[in-house]
Length: 400
Image (cartoon, rainbow, N blue to C red):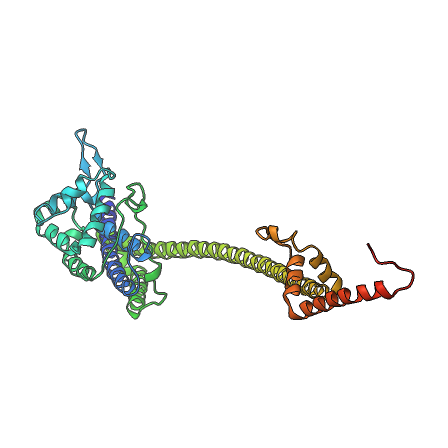
């Protein structure tokens, strides 16, 4: 039983070390992919806090910096979780013109996680993230004090990480240090969807086949009579190997199930977003149609009003023309000219006052040559005809 428990412990250690190595390799691979997507996005768009590529990159970098980070031991012997800002603050103090002091003195940032996120944004805008990471890695004593064995910052992959981050110096970042991304309570979640590939390589197929062959061979060997007579140590060793192989298969199966569940949740989320977008599109189209109808009705009403105003203007012009014609005809009649000659003196004192249109027409007719001649002829005929008719008419006596 002791040998069996020892074998199980060894299997657990091997399984944990294998999963840790896979986690480190996956984080570094995804970090390279995220840097590449940031470089591609920066060619035609400004990178800020709202960019999904940047949010994913910051989450990956936080996971790398907190990989196997030691906790802080209190006076009572309890270990409390620690943020990567504690490590950066100590290990990057020798960087020339460091921004550590300015981030420490920020009033709107209090938690250590928020200060670490602010530090990432500041050094990205300064284009010095790789310089800070390299300086922290050179202080190996401090790095060893903050991280456990098997951490990314203690492995050979850390130098590759610093080389990968040099490419970010070509991007012009623009961040606001008062946004929601600096909230220390918000966890860093990595979105693996842009980096998933639904193809199985030949190496993984061959490794799975090899594992199945070894499982089959071990099963066949264990069924022979010679192995049944083997020692208990060999049996326990074989059992530990069986346990380790079953654990590996179980881990692969659980990883596939987790990916499947994640993709199903993502598909449901995208379907909900799509239905919401379709409903919003329908509402906007209906609003556009209603606005178009309202504008069409308003345009027709304005056109009708313009036509009515044009008709009224035409009627006013015709009335003015008819009034002018009637005034000109009345000015040519003799009775009007005589009435004006009979009272010439009453109108002269009132020239200073505003005259009516009929008086203007009558005055204009008196100044014309034809009206003057007709008036003179009438006066001459009256003056010549009255004495002869009075003297020659019988029965009439001349006045005394």
